Length: 132
Length: 132
Length: 132
Length: 132
Image (cartoon, rainbow over all chains, first blue to last red):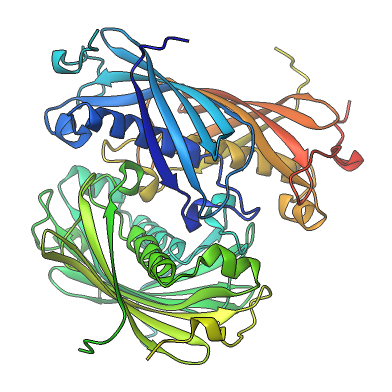
């Protein structure tokens, strides 16, 4: 575990239409929470993703992996820890830990790639280069 | 009731993540079904909405009204009747009846307006003008 | 306008998957925001909707009406004002004003009815009776 | 590759609110499509998932892995191939290939576990045991 890796914490309250008939947060929604984790981590670093898009800088998810350990329910406040695990010229790997009151609900990782408006891979802008 | 008004029928099966913790189709989802009704009605008339967008023709919803009479549940096959109620130079009114095995679940109406890529109102293309 | 009607204000940031291909908050999502307004207004009054459900008290939407005035975009922080307009033994009417920086984006109203686990109408619990 | 493994094919048309501001099917939606693949495969085998739930048999996703190769867009008709890769007493592994006109868009795998109404793992019913 790299203790110097940039980390970000986000509290997310589970919304009613995000929960399925079992009363559980639907497993597809976790990916939307992880996206929120990335966006808020970026914002904490001084960048709004909406601005990046206006400048022609897009990120698309190319890989995702989730291990679901315990269900989350409607109205619970979850804690999402997002870690920037690795950054190359065009790709960023993140890992995620979603928990509730210290109980781990899910672990995940994603790879995002920087693309232009047409979907072609382009270098991540310098301004977003990972600080050492 | 105008018996000559264009009508379209669509069967929609309720998907798992569309259902909430009560086991009911979430009330926000009905608007997505009505949109599908409009899109498929357009397609039946020879127009793909995706093509219209590529030509700079967009439709935005400006008004919606829904009366929910009975719940729909996961995996049920619903029948959506979409009626083109009224068309002006820039707006189209639709009405909807969503039912299951002849039981009426919801009645609704919407107004959509034709806009360009920037969201400014523009005349509905001649090719979409309502046939008399 | 009843200046004594209970009101609640909620800030909501538009999420990426809530926005459609035009870049606009999808019109079906507004109903999900209004639901959040109702839930948070209830919470501000000391009641968690999740607890009510555990006690067999559910609310279902029986009517909804939305007028969309201007689009909302990804990552914008919107302000939702929820007003309890009227309460009977079994029904509550709310009205909503969604705005961004003082610009009104949408106005809406809903009716919700109190039902039991089987969907049968039941009286709203005394504890939720509107304070005068 | 096991040529005798049960396979199922499903055509899915991309809906408007499933697409994000880039015009791409949102990456979280793929998991919802895969779920539809599992449900329809089950139905083709004579079982309705809704009936299973009424009998107290639930399946929860415990693992998911997706590799996104190319974007899908609004209104495209995609082809989803679902394969039952492995079944144990309590778990089923599926793999998925999502394509459009022969072009592979995504590959994925999931593990689902059989649980009861309270979320406790239980054996998969005999009636669902994999035929040899």
